[in-house]
Each structure stands twice: as C-alpha cells, then as structure tokens.
Image (tube, rainbow over all chains, first blue to last red; front, side):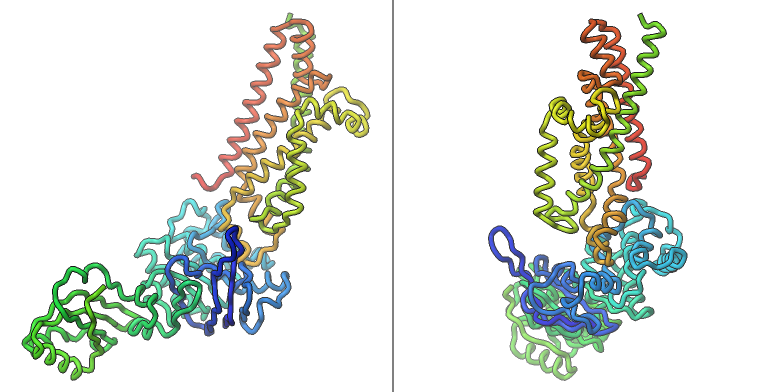
Length: 332
Length: 220
C-alpha cells in the first residue's frame, strides 16, 4: 500500500544541515495497522508528513498504491491526498465550523455534492459515536470527542489509508483506549490501512499488527509487534519496551532471571508451582503482563536464591516447562 | 448660539463624516484585504511562500504607512484631482483616506490571518486543499472574529483621519471643528464636534466588538 525507499529528509537551518530522516525503507501492507514508535525528536512526525508530501523528501521515493509521489504534478498530488486521511495530535478542527461542517470540509474540497456530503457526514459522525453532536462547535467538545470528529473527517473522502500522528498523546488513558478501539473497528469494518505514529508503547500494544522502531531518523527495528515485544533487538526498542527502571536498582540479590511468557503460559501459576516444586524462594523484582492482539504476554524479573543447587533446579524446571528465560546481570 | 442653522450644519457634518468613513473603509478593504491575504500567504511560513513578492509588498506598505497622513493628503492632491475632479469636500477626501488606510488594513488583515492555527492549515493541506481553497475556506472564516475586530479598529482610525482632513477643507465634523473652533474661537462648537466624534467612535467600536463576539464560535 505504502512503500518508502531510501527516504531521506534534511532541513536547512541557520547552523547548517539537519538530517532528520536517513535511508528509511518501509513497506506498509494493505489492511494492516502499522505502528511507528520512537522517542520524541526521532523524526516520526516528519516521516508521516513525507508520506503525503506535506514535507517533500530530500531523496528517496514514496510509493503509494503504485504511484510514485514525487512524479505527481501538484494538481495530482492534491487529488491523491484526498485518498489519504490524516489525524493529528492537536485535532486541528476548524474552530468556526460545527462538527458536521468539519466533516463536510474534505468533501467540499473533493467536490462531493452538498446533500450527499451532508448525508455521509451524518453517517460518519454516527459511526464515531457522535450522532448527537452534529451541530456542536469544537469548543463545546471534549478532547476525545474532538478526535472522533477528526477521525470522521479523515474518513470522509473514503481514504485508502489513515495517517495518525500522535493522535492519543493529548488524551487521557481511558479516552486513548476508546479512540484506539474506534480505529481498530474502522480497520476491521472499512478495511482502511492505518499508520500510527506514537511514542506510547500502549498504543502499539493495543492495536498494531506490525511495528517499526525509529531512532535518530533511522528505522532500527521492524517486525511483528509480538516479536519485537518478546525479543527487542535494538537499544531503542529495549528502552521503550522493557522499563528497566530504578525499581530494580536498589534490590540486593546477585543473579537475576528474566522470564518471558509467550501467550500460553501467562495464566498458569508458573512461579507458584516453581517455588513449590524446587523448594526455593525467589524475589519478584518486576512483572508486567500485557494483552497483545488478544493474547496474554508477560515478562517477569526474578531475583534468584544464592545457592547454586536451587538455581539449577529452577533453571531445569523452566527448561522443562519450555519457558523462555535469560539470565541477566542486575546492572541498570 | 446652537440655532437651527448650526444644528443643520452639525447634522450635515455628521452625515459627511459617516459617508467619508464608511466609504473609505469599504474601499480600503477592497484593496487592503487582498493585500493582507497576499502578505500572509507569500510569507516564508505561509501557505504559498514567495519571498520576493512578500518583501516588495512589505516595503511598499511600510513606506506608505510611514508617511504622516496630512503630508500624504497634500502629496497626492494631483491624484485626488485626477480621480474625483476636485480636491475639496468629503468625496475628495476619500482618495487620500483610502491610500492611507489600505496599507494599514493590509497589516491588520495579515496579523489576523496569521493568528489561524498552523495545525488547522496543515490539516486542510492534508485533505488536498488548494492554496485558494485554504484562503477562502480556512484562513478567512477561521480569522473572521479577529478580522471584524480589526475592521472596528480600522474604521475608528479612518474616522480620526477624516477629521484631520478638515484642515484642508475635507468636509465633515473635522471641517466644522477647524472653521469654528480654530478660526473663530467658538470653543463650544468645537467641543460639540469632539463629543460627536467620540460618540461615533464608541458606537463603531462597540458594534464591531459585539459582532465579533457573536460570530466567534470558540467562546460559548
């Protein structure tokens, strides 16, 4: 659906050239929800703007639905943008227009007949759960409601892809969840390909199928969300996924074990059984379980007992149960 | 002293002042609004940056704005005569008023349009809006309350200038104030014209603010 080939973007600033994106290669498949995660300043927002050419890439290609974006005339580009919806962190609704008129806006641009546009706008607002707010102005809506209007607006011209730039960053956790659920159902029912830019792991976890990790303007890791979560390879991914925080620092044991649950065993009382069977106590330093694509995954950091025999028993037990683990130095 | 004749004179003065002010403001917007849009759009951070045009336009506008109104008025007398046929009276005063006010209006419009959230403009661009569509569907409607407040400021400024034109026979309340207050030392007449001017300014300002407040959907 969208392919990026050796995409680079530099900005000329007063102090010289700023390389924001370097040799980005990505393929976003039709119908998937693809996440791009990175810390702030990684170039995420520039990347998404390069896709619809709000920012013109310095070199490289953006291929959207078989079209080379750089070869389009400015007129054709405007037309193509109508098949790419975009949603923003700060909603960016027209303040002087009602919700209904906001959703009508892209259809005015696409010269959809007025009556038809109105009808579709009403349907879309009902789809996003705002059927009773048609004539409300943005200032009368909450953050979550504004984002729903923005999503409805982005869907108005029946786009093939929805570009989402940090769309939940200004929202509280509950609203974030409901907005993500909305995106997921849009993806399922309308088959729209969704690209999500975020710095929040939860967003990726909750709805993305595949993820790319970006750091310093480069893609450092790409893969299925599950893979990246279970075995993050890049430093950035580890930083984002494994919160090896201060809570581990002040513990006193010597050897630690990171146990990773892979969806089958998360609800088995593994640790409990292990301590009973091995007759050894462990200290749980950190535990985190998540639901990814409806399956449970988790990881747990255990502080091992001091005597070698108990440790070996524990390792044997885990091997026996086929649980993925690795021993870690407790230096963070 | 405020006999029938004087009252009629004042009535005529009010009418002429309103005529000059409103006509000049309208014409100043005919020129100033597109100029302001052009200033905003061609800016480096604008929707359609053309730095050369922006700089040139900015220079001309600054030049016109830095000439004091009375000097401008005298300076363009030939132009006034060419357009209106005379240099005296309220219709003739409209010419220098428009010349002086258009650049002012352009700057007011520019600053109003620049208040529009760049995110909203970006959103409009992401939906495939052309530059022209962004101007008349996003910039102007979104800046409407601010544009109306700007218009109220412009109209009161123009009113002040129109009174100044009284010194060179521009007509309206300004001429009455100069003729009676300055040349004949009738301070009471001058005081009345000043009060009338103040009232007119207040009315324009208040109406402008009310319309602006009413049209703004951000505060409810």
